[in-house]
Image (cartoon, rainbow, N blue to C red):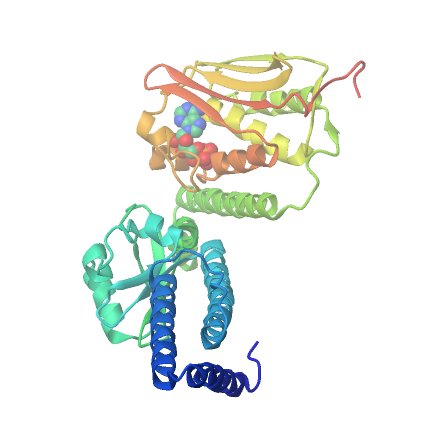
Length: 437
Ligand code: ADP
């Protein structure tokens, strides 16, 4: 703290010192000699203090000032107080900067700040990962050169920030990134980048889905319309042809109805909020019912059907969904196995987990098709699937039902040998009933 009038006091003290020394000098008749010696001593002392001050400012690591009297003491105190003030300000600033950095690191998006020449001023960790940037190793990294995408350069040049740019990630071609820009301080620009792979996949799925549904519905409608155009002249047509037309129209309308029912079933399962694990399902009873339906379906196919069902093995789940999944797998095995084949259905306990499997000795499925077979509308042999009345949605429904029950579909298949579709329910969901429900 600065003491008021300190300089005046110092001046008074100096004058007093000269007066005393002058008086003593006068007493010994050496007035000028004594004043000269005092002035020299004061100059030497001042020089010494300046020397100490210089050492303290430039070379000393100590913050605390040297203790000395007079104006130099004041000077030390003043400098020291300024140092303390600056230190506090630096602390506050570095706290603000580190909170700002931590905030940007916590963002779920990648952030890059670039200057007018597109050089990176700063970027967060996510940006380094998503864009493969080696900043700050390369301090003067230019983002346009790093990303090497003409679309990106056009986006920066155009500065049309209201419409974001979507492009594959330079670090991973399977990822789609969305770039948004905004003006930032000092003519800089801030880029916000987020992963929209899932969104663009959903958008693609939506487009494919609409195209597939339209296609699937258009085919039977075209057939029905073709026959309907013939009907005004029905009186002139041979009855055999009219009967064929009516039969075909019925088949096609049943196909459309099945397709719509399966679509509704699929969307019901996807949108279902039912608590999956509240109710115990009597799976043996359900499979025996499906067995009767399978035998009816098998009348023209003449397969050997084997049902090996553990009678007390139940699971927690949704009965209607499990019925749909199991029947889809069993009916598929009947449909896609050439006549007089063998289809084995098993429901048993395997290491405390309930396990369902359907094995057939049909044509089998190639590995490349197995990977896609649970996609909606995917069929290995379209013509054959249509002949069986298949919509291509069956396995998609199975997949969703099993996911709903914390399980998944396993497919083992070899072309020319047959297929084995199976799934397991966790021990938590499995229950062995002491007596049938
Ligand atoms: P679909 O309604 O056409 O039967 P799915 O989704 O149930 O549709 O099955 C998709 C495709 O998987 C079928 O078109 C068929 O080519 C093949 N597939 C399903 N189950 C079997 C099986 N047991 N053996 C051979 N191919 C099968």
